Image (cartoon, rainbow, N blue to C red; front, side, top):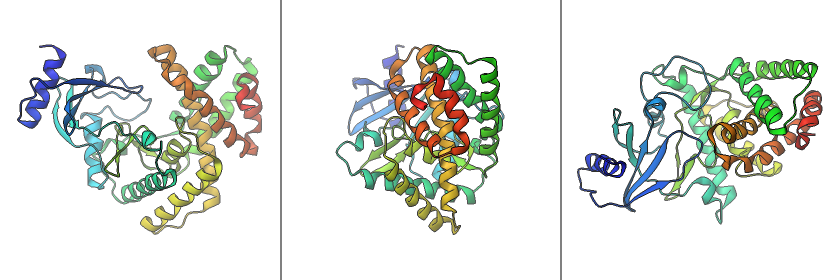
Length: 344
């Protein structure tokens, strides 16, 4: 049976209706090993996610923790539904075939909705949803959810920073630091990783950004959550507000951080120290956006997908903004700026 026939058969079994002559459209993917196909015409259409056998229970991201015994997408999906977070409806999962039928959320990503939409209203909604998710998750620990079995620890932060050194500094710039400079980088990266890992952890989406939030009928729907893990409260905020695909000015970012803090305090009853919260947000920005810059070059060189190279400059601008706000990291800024002038 060819792929189109398999896709139609999956939707037919999921719905109990014939899709024998339904049109099939391959949807644009991101950096994932999964592929997506729309079967049918809206509003009577569905999406089939096709997963290579080797990727069924393996993450595209680095991480630790035990090997999953269940598809991470389904495992984390179940937990998010318990938190009343809107996620795509799953109609069918055929594990032997590596195919899942989910509802069609259309092509309206958060990023697309920003074009001609009310930016403040959309981001306020997104940060409030994130605050509600985090506050609920901190009260509902679930040992069966994979996100509670793995974490951003010192080793993972350090690995991601060195991922930047290899791909974003050495390979992207075409230059190699001296042995003394590499030792200085190693020491600084370890200090940053240690400081980040010392923060309290909770449920973290890991990639809560404009292409992983869908907008349908005015509702925000969270996708691509299968790599969720334990991390600091600011992590998903960095992904959203220091998004490499949508650049935001600092004053707007500050306003959205304030909106998040207000909603989190309302949901949790906890008082947040705003100054230290924002300082940690800047430090985390340095780590996350350096990692992104390196990752985009890795995806280009190793996966043969140059589509993310255009987002490297925005990632580096965010890093520079955050470094400028961290006087204690001037040494790092001077060193990396020698090889990556955008950071100087």
